[in-house]
Amino acid sequence: MHGSWRAGDQLGRPAACDHVGFGGPANVDLLSVLVDRVEKGKAPGDLEVSEQKAEAPSFATLRALPLCRRLAWPHYKAGAVTEASSFTCAP
Image (cartoon, rainbow, N blue to C red; front, top):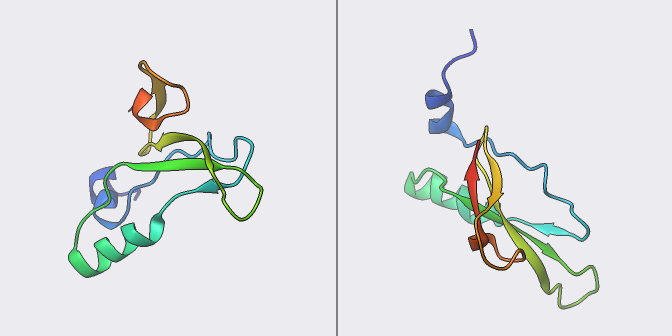
């Protein structure tokens, strides 16, 4: 009835987005992911979401976090808390 998560991964990759909207506009490059999936048959990998300054026109990135796949969320490892590389996705 529900299907398997593995089968769902062939179509798309659900992601946990509870940390999106943490102050400013959030940006995720989903167009490139869609183009790669449709034109190249490449399944999406790990993504990153960036919080940006709300002041136009620069929209400077304030901080970035990994956009984790389903059942996982960002866990701090080490380093600057404003960099996605300082986090790892885990349940």
